[in-house]
Image (cartoon, rainbow, N blue to C red; front, side):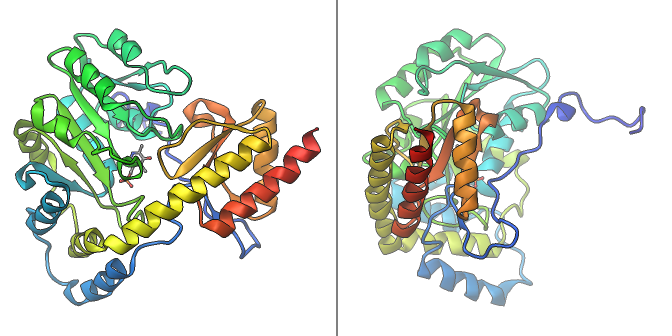
Length: 362
Ligand SMILES: *Cc1c(COP(=O)(O)O)cnc(C)c1O
């Protein structure tokens, strides 16, 4: 490496993000349960829009995303003028760090928080700060205790990944009110739709100047491969983020397919119903087998084993059967495996393999 040509401070501290693996050499019956993808894929309406979008590949996309923002505003009862769209919610997270945090500033998130918070904070030259959790659950008091006059951003995923736990809106509100004046609270709602009766914090955004919500089409809508996310915030924040956003950050295809996916109520409702049913079945089965789980409010279950060795053994047993789940040592949970709730057949296969594995452990 050249000693004179050097990147900005912080960049070399970034550990490359590893996505959930998706294949096993020599096998064609693999089920991928490592990235919290919708087991039914994208809906028919979205697929049709995707095919149609092929006719417009030579056209530049809209720079203002007006159509998608209006559709989102209508769907969720939000002010479309305070929505920003990005290439996945990852891009919104990155805009936030770029715009609000730099050298000397702190970006605060919780112990088992999403890896992108740290990556985006370091990429902006800021200092990541980690607040402890209590029983794998966001601890508002611990976060408030870690906030300083340097804290510029606080990221909370609710429900959280990889734990699946969530805290009530009253706790989020207490956090928003208790933070120092220069800190912006970001509510990452990647799994908000899976939590019944939860608006992702949208109503809180409407009443406060220091709260932003991020959402995605990658999980419930089954569009992880297309990269579409969005944020909702106070006008002053959205105006700032739009200055760092590239004008053509989303393609015609992304915009059209996202809008189509929003209109497909049947696909959304089927996905939610099946997820709730098989999530409850899977965690019930795991508990019967002696594998603990927390109450998940998302589309995955965090299986807790006796120790790291047992989790690794179970992971190998699942792999040997063509089932790919997520090891979460990088989230500080090496004794756990995060298992996406698949369709009925996938859940039954997972339970079957884990049952045989636990039997051999006795
Ligand atoms: C999957 C996920 C996201 C979404 O990422 P995209 O960039 O929208 O695909 C954001 N936050 C958390 C916690 C996630 O698990």
